[in-house]
Length: 145
Length: 113
Image (cartoon, rainbow over all chains, first blue to last red; front, side, top):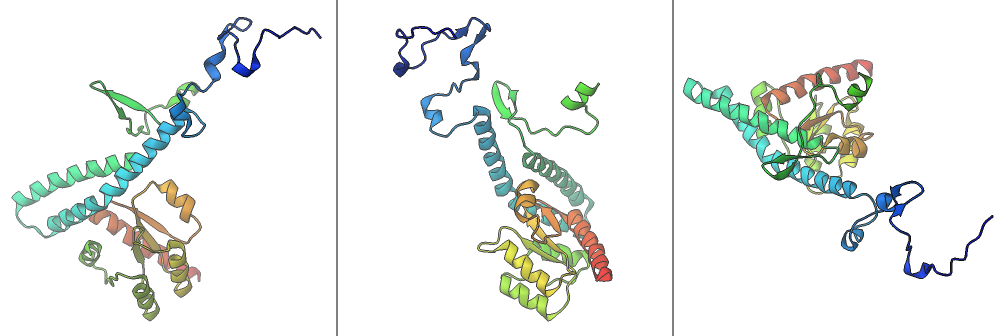
């Protein structure tokens, strides 16, 4: 086995090898955790996992806080719809009910968030909570096709 | 007590209570077709409560009103004896569905026992 004199290397001061691994022609740093020291205090793991945990906490809070007042509104709109005899009032209540159904769907989508994915909305990253439709092929289906 | 109003409107006979002890006392005084309770009642030990309800009448379905993702409830209360979860916000239609499903389930359980 060939041995080399490594006296020039200073292990106490860290790995001084160049970033590029010439044998494999790849960056040595690619598998390393490149977070800053402040991020490291949060614990080990990929940044994406931390982002997902944050997103899940945020969506759970939204669902928890909004569900209760919307249940009350939903219930009273339904009771008013059942008891109201005026067509004009009923029409307006149906519009409110449709909008409440949309809110209910949004809250359902928030409940089903399981990965951190954002979409661009006019330069702002917002959480992508759109549900994939049953008929729409997903990544797995595309691979099969 | 909105749920009480909706259930009454559907045609159910409802007993609404505020405390766990009142609920258990009512259940002991006579048979019921369904128990609906809120997960967010402060200080309620859900598993212990459902165990007590099952001890009184094991053929009575139990439904819990919930807000968080279903996976949380599956992991935490999957084995606790809760038969139905009703996700907030819900309306007239969802309550009607719950009542009809619970009634059929209760009939099945009573026949089986």
